[in-house]
Image (cartoon, rainbow, N blue to C red; front, side, top):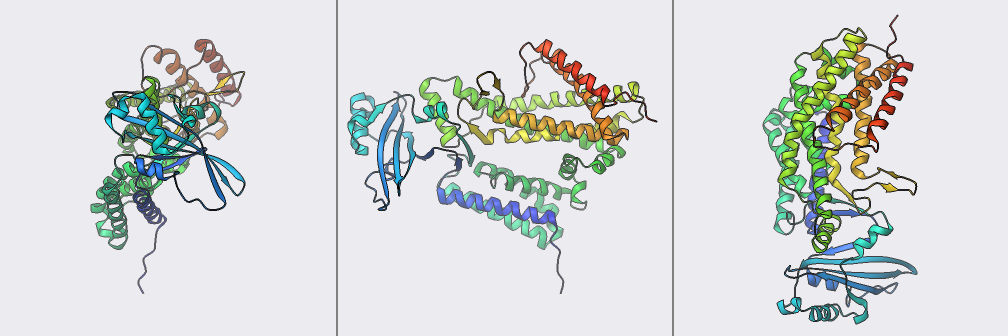
Length: 490
């Protein structure tokens, strides 16, 4: 019997497509985005009747009792939107917990009621059948009080307004089509190259519906893109090479250095990474600034849309920033390559071609691609845009800064492996050379470039920057010397 072996690459391809189908199926069942949110329990409604029926006159199990502890609402004319929250205390078999039910949509009552504050308050009391003293009009709803007492974040799969109703079924059909095409690449290998563009294109679209919990779409895009050159082994394709180098694979790095044709792939790598990281950081910054630059009502609505409903706002400046970041990234790459060449060839007397080292160093920037995930998670204030205040100092532990540090440490590890591989030196000495290179590169950025040019992207700034940067540079130079950066090989 003729059996076909399932390769690990195809298994990941299949897993990715199944995740997309599962994601879209859950979107259809929930009729909205899939939101993973930390405490407290908050359920959002955009339909008034569903909102009321969720806690009013609902038959509870005998072991469950609920008490409405407060109702708050906010509305400002001439805006039609009203935001209403119900804080509810649940007692389940003696275990007490709190939950919040929220409604944010156009006012469902009469126009005159909406425009008259006294009538609006009475309408909320009557509609929700609650005691008059429990209802307050307050521009600081629970979502803002949460900011002061706890860390609260959300991870959203799907964009509100683009996945509800019939649109959800469209995404489900699209996801099934992706799965069918993935299976076809296995059953009929000759169709791989023709199906690959469709798989990549459809997978990109599914990010609007959650992208198979992001992981699924990424798998299908990366492996599908490799389908353009499926006659090669996966690790020899564009994304395959990026992944192989990101794994600190010295063999893959050596192959790049020895193949002069890789310089074109190096340029493409820098461009792709720059666009991905810039869009991720740009979207996060845009949404954070939106929260801080509006009036109280718009501010509150933006926070609701982001943290409760999973919305993500965008503007043309995000995408213009991504385009400008390409030029900046190429200049940074060429600058790093020049520094390594001057130190390695002119100062330390190693022998290697500038083009070979430049091709390798382009892949040092690959870890920055994880910054594309920056807008996937949002935290409440003070974690939305500030650091953690521990009393004696404030430390940068926000989500985007965490990704920034991870990507930079990962990139430095790649730099050390690249230097050790191309220069054929020990990892310890490569660490010293890497510190030397990184220090000069950092001085060029923070002392000469950043003060003169407003470069888009995320960076760390220091108080008393000149003194701190020079002190740090001196320490790193000393460590580089101790690690043998200037040692002559025997």
